[in-house]
Length: 334
Image 1 (cartoon, rainbow, N blue to C red):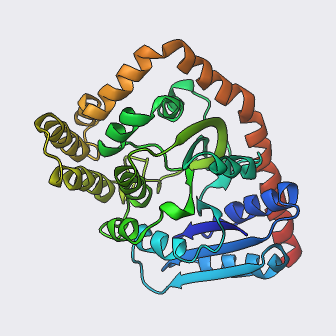
Image 2 (cartoon, rainbow, N blue to C red):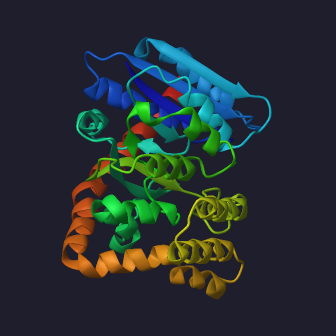
């Protein structure tokens, strides 16, 4: 069984896109497999629950097992993330936010790599609410840098608040009670806390990177990546707390200093002044990024071009097809 997990909070206008992208994967690439769908809703105050239930009712035949984890009150993404992961029945699974989409390429080819690796880091393409793909190469520097984050570099980057890996897939066996307990100390940093704990607990973790979009990542006024997002300040505070958690068990003076600097850097990320926010680029993690960029500059620029130029048109058409299908079904229901 393969498990799809969708997390939702006040995303009634867009969660159907996420669910439709799952249907596309099953219909195009899922022949001969059995599927579980887990959908969590964190106490939405809009019509998200109704939209989800309506979609599930119309697509029951796709799934051997469906779990609806709907909360009456908001508890934060970390609580919902853990509750969903505890219900995963398949050995292979992926997690999708309710405002994003799975890219139109075969996701099962990516998860099949877990036969050889413990974790597979993947690329993504960002897009606006209108469906315009963001094609600026520099936007994806942190994405392609995952190709060079292995061994000690990976461990240091993750400990210093690595902002990528959010779309990674990993072996189910890595999800232990200790990982769940660590995630539940926070409200917004579910994937960062998860990967930090996993990497901390597995020194020899086997990781690879695939330079192909796995997820289409929607940028909106409510995205955590948006500096004006209501949850941005809390998120940055919790990123600092993750560095604090690393300092508790760190004995090496140099690394403690780096963690302290990274903790301070997190505090300026949500500052209202643009120029103050620029100080985040003096953090230890960004020095790792700079070092990797200088060392592998030609290859990195080539990978950025390959990622965007090869796939952006397919992603745009995928979004348009899903939008047309959603609008057509909406007219039929009227």
